[in-house]
Amino acid sequence: MKKDTRKFIHLRNEMVKNQIKARGLIDVDVISAMSKVPRHCFVSEALMDQAYKDFPLPIGYQQTISQPLIVAEMTKALELNRNDRVLEIGTGSGYQAAIIAAIAFKVYTIERIQALFMRTRKLFDELKYHNIVTKYSDGTLGWKEQSPFDAIIVTAGAPEIPSLLVDQLAFGGRLVIPVGDRVSQTLIKIYKDETGIYETDLGDCRFVNLIGEQGWDE
View 1 (cartoon, rainbow, N blue to C red):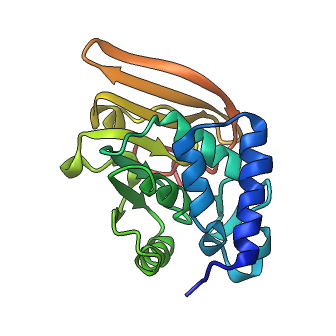
View 2: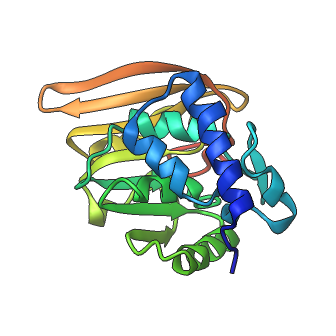
């Protein structure tokens, strides 16, 4: 099992100080989660010493663990509450789910790559993230049986906003998703209430492609 050590705690504190707080993100819950979750446990042993640096890292299968700042910004945009039930599309390394799980009541996360799904489920168990529920499936279809969700986060770039995810969002819910072409996207925040759907542009970003029935073709 991967361990937390004094060295990694120091690197994590430096990450929060220099990459998150220094850039103006001061959300107390997000800062607390980023300070606690051992990011190095979500990458391969060969990359552990780079885990807290200011860039994304490969996790295999042409997927990445996002830059710490983008994880913090997307988490902040979700406006999480302690009682929230959150759906994540694209488990990947599991790091984003772990950050959310440190704030919200329960996280439901879907991964379409079986090897990543199996590896990350084992890691959640080892790290005792008991409020994370995993599923091996096409994430673009959501998780209807567990809906509606208070917040939904998509960690891959979509050609458009999947309608099924909007349908599974509760009134008062927030959806954060990168939307654009296969090269670059815009981070979009959706707010849904009884009167309609409202979009906010959160800026440019770049993610791996969202593959699935309501995403890109393989």
